[in-house]
Image (tube, rainbow, N blue to C red; front, side, top):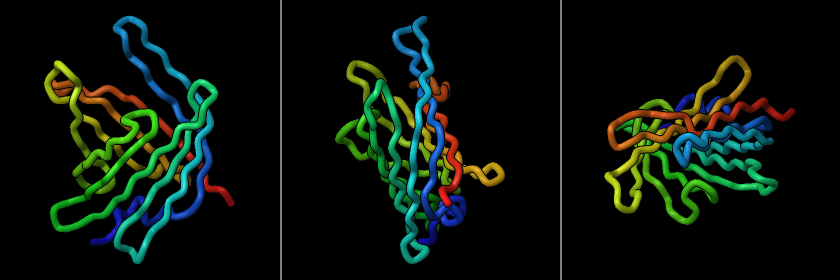
Amino acid sequence: MPVPNVLAQSAGEWRGTSKLHLNWPPGNESITEGSSTMKVVVFNDQYAVVHYGWEYEGKTEKGSLIAAEGKSGTTFGWSDSWHQNIEVMHLRGKNADCKGTYQVEGHPEWGWRIAFSRVGESLQMEMFNISPEGEEEWAVQAVYERVE
């Protein structure tokens, strides 16, 4: 299984800014911005491991993702110290744009989407929360520049 192209082309270290969009409780929306780092490691062109760190309320949070692309599309395994703490979410999709689901006690299943893209020389990682009704709202927008 090869690595999704956007990650294969992004091996190395990155530094940038991450925005976190908090939309709960209703009517109390806030957006915080902080520094962020990312490292993309590609193994034998078969899979990529992405490690990132980001700042929230003076604390560094960390996340990791493993990605591979096969006959049935792209697969991610993802965990983040703030977003889901000790769980590993399984996501599927195409070309480094994958969706997974998670449970909220007392509610129908929610969705989560993670997408990587390149815009010029920048690497972008976006995360979206998907309501049980299928409405998608951005949760994280991170833009990175390669560290020389």
